[in-house]
Image (cartoon, rainbow over all chains, first blue to last red; front, top):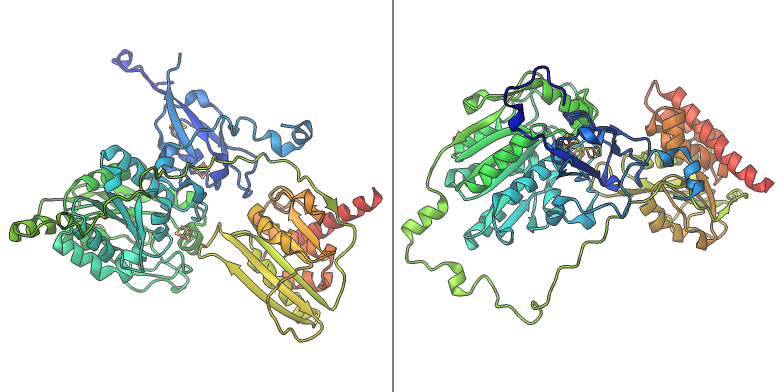
Length: 87
Length: 526
Ligand code: SF4
Ligand code: SF4
Ligand code: SF4
């Protein structure tokens, strides 16, 4: 993660990493997950689901910090995040 | 994925999206009736976010889920009870709190949550709300406030900000709205918080606190209704409304409830405004009637288990089906047009939001006003504003029409798989099926004549507006024939669409016409 200055206690913290999954058939393409992900992990895809909506996809999954905001904010219950070990 | 499918540009774009095998269930699926998803709420509606905050809070709360019940009234938010996999009650309009009160009194060990909208709780149910607060009934109320009546078409209500436009206050609301936290606090609630759904984390935490606190606890969730309130107030998309919250919401926990009115513009004060202790109704009851035995002692509430109960397991959830986007596997491509018989029936079907009903109306007008023939137009759709299956049916005839409904359509235009599945069996012999080929996979076994037209793709990629997919489909209908002359249909399109969009819609119509003709011509050549 890029930091504008290195915090003194940075060694004491482990930045979690998440794996984001998307159940595309539930998505209605509202873009909230893309817009409000603080780490800019997601983007809208050009593919469509059965109702003709564009679901999002993870463009830079390695940046996800498992904050789960997308999971909570998605009105369609289609995103969830599992915290994983980076190694 | 087949090579053929990969040749289609759109399919590649789904690379990276998990396939069926990779998909596990969503962690909230344990508390959702997954078979009913996707839910009916519009794209960008915030009710779903409020529900996910509630589910997340409930999962953390440690409450015994067998002893939690959700009660909803009527309205878009009233649907919540139907999506949550808990004991739930979908009650009459405005009466969620009385039902919940009864439930709680008879089952004092239960946690009863009322999850409903502002129209239901604060308008028609306003009196129940203040009196339940006054009694300090042990209920948690989650009030989703979207500033208008969503399900019935965006009318103004008692929470609509002054000067906001709605379908029944076109020059702006001239009344003052209720300030929900003030109302709840004044009436006696023990916990009152307000958040917008953008504050998902904080909303979740407030719901968590409200669930665990005794007494009448109220959480107001300000939530976008982009389809109606947003459209009338220049915030047409869910993201516009979220952006407005982002700019205007301020957190002020120490604000006095009477200071937190919501205006049309200006700030939305959020926070936890009240957190006090008062004896609850139940505590008072137990203090004053120590001699009354709890109802379950009397054997009134729970029937003894029967053999039927043993071994009863809820059915497992069906796996979530992720469809690959492939070009339609078309059975027979039609070459012939629908006959210009004296009596023709047609059906347009899809899901709400695609403009199916409008397209049907345009077709009906074309026949009656421009072709000067007889026509009837009927429509069917669910209570939702967008998302549910809907259909429009037109009968065209040279003689007076004695029965207005379509029974054996000669032409079906289907823009959604479910609609196709429901209606394709009705197609009359020799009839033609028009489908949106990206959204409908026809059954080749039927041997029906199919004309595939990628209406949504054309509208979105060539014309730049997904909304005109219905007009592309009308163009295709004109090409296939069906008792409406092309000029009449085109004329009717131009007269019915919003001013300023005539040129776009004319292009959409012509493109649909040309495409369908191309499909038919190419299948003749083969
Ligand atoms: S968990 Fe947080 S960082 Fe990861 S994708 Fe979701 S919003 Fe972005
Ligand atoms: S928030 Fe949910 S419904 Fe909206 S675009 Fe993201 S995944 Fe789709
Ligand atoms: S009409 Fe409004 S409140 Fe109802 S589902 Fe649509 S956006 Fe949500």
